[in-house]
Length: 151
Image (cartoon, rainbow, N blue to C red; front, side, top):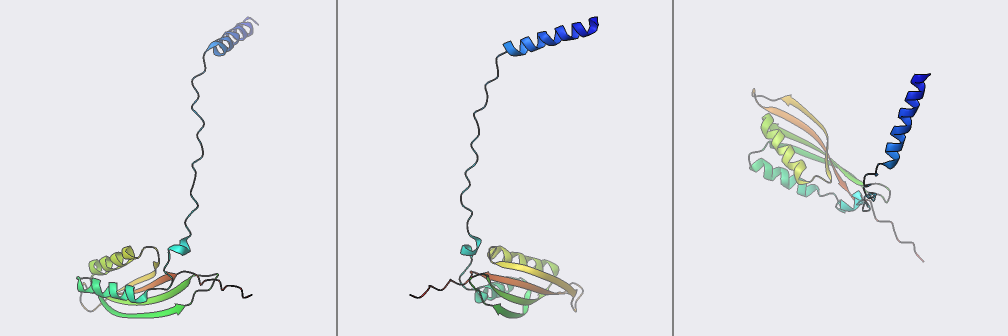
């Protein structure tokens, strides 16, 4: 019993010390960060898919020592008010690994908001260091405008 009494007495002293101790200054409440309305991704897209700009950039990169552009095929899906417009590009490149990689990297860096790489496959070409790349790219454009209701 003496032990319990001493423990209780010790606990009483600790509680008294805590009650007498000044509380540390409380930090002012932190206001939640006001987040701006997120930007509408679709508004950052071009109104129409700029296939010609992408092809010109591929040709420019080829001239700057990038991979050779063998072919480019395009298939368009028009935008609707509820969906983004898309142009699917099938691009064939030829070159060594470094030139293919730098060409694709530069192209994707040039149009980061609306050019997506969906698939990349590589296979050996004729020369030991030569590769052929098949690249599936998607260009996005804004949804179509909602037609105004006639009166």
